[in-house]
Image (cartoon, rainbow, N blue to C red; front, side, top):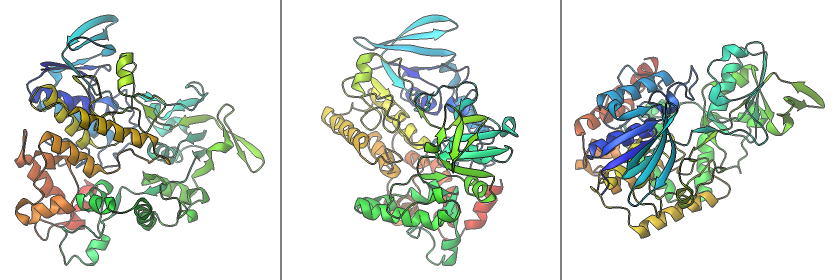
Length: 517
């Protein structure tokens, strides 16, 4: 059984893995290439100065360490960084983190692994029984083929503040989450800003109308139910909704999604022709951005087709004329950095560095086939702390011998399911869109599934119809903290117009106050 575990990375996934490993009695150390923990949330990271999370503080959080109540509903990047530092301090993780230590090689041995680690210009050797790779999917900036960073070309990873673009002509290649917000912000100071699009997308605000199937809301809510707007992650990620959508065929579910997004975003053709999402485009991506529609509506931000832009010459073809730009910002995504893994490991995990959707093939995005005592945490396309924490808790319990290793046949089926996701066409926006099912599958493995029939009253209804939150997986089972969990769930229930899972409460007024905070 593994007694010592080396964790690669000390971002959110690495911190969760380190805390879980120590919780299970493992001798754990986390190697972090940067000079401090926190991953993409700390400098030098990927967070620009004005960034706020697209998800609420109830999803960007670990289950047993709630945000301070003064934290805005959508925290700024610096608040997330401070939260992670507080998490490490509270659970005594700093003493087990080795900043400035870059893992250069992971070599399988019999048993265990040997790590070659660079620190202060020298190479250290570390032998360990197990390894958890928690270096994340946002490790290396992806540039379009033929383009390199330098001169007038930069990646969005380096963007911090719009002031340096004042008076310049700026093109932003990429129209998803970072591209949309960065383009909208720069448009406020630049001489000209154009966002280059490859396909239309839905642009929706952070807070959206509560869905009618929110069955835990007071029956007499009436018009208040229609007017209530809450964070996207609190609205769409319920078990009841996920089960209902799973019972629909793909076309029906797609049409329902189209109609719902149209109801939120409206007829985007009126905003700009390139934003038109045809009724037969059932897989158009959804981008959460409060700023982009307003920037386009004002005329400050222009939209153009990416195919009309020549990145080598920084020119845009517009109706027979050519316009030049001073700067090109590539908001073209990221990929994992796994070059430190031995070739045999890379083969076992099916690593494809060119596949941004599904770069690795792992059972439940955690365990590979054929490489004992190796696990991955946070190696999936999804923004929720809850999944990476459940992965970390399960991996640690297995590596400590507290839970059985995945059954080989089950692991084979799980990896095959991931391969199916890789091969599906057209490609989905995210590989695991059913967030409740992904969380619950991990919770079942770990033995921390909440009782969905809990006494048949308010809490049970809230667990079924309300949002799936990390706190729910501390109600019972391994390392439960029901006191913290119930406090968080009651706080969220208030946003929906309930008081500790009963009737009444603050409702929309409470939500508005939290936004102001």
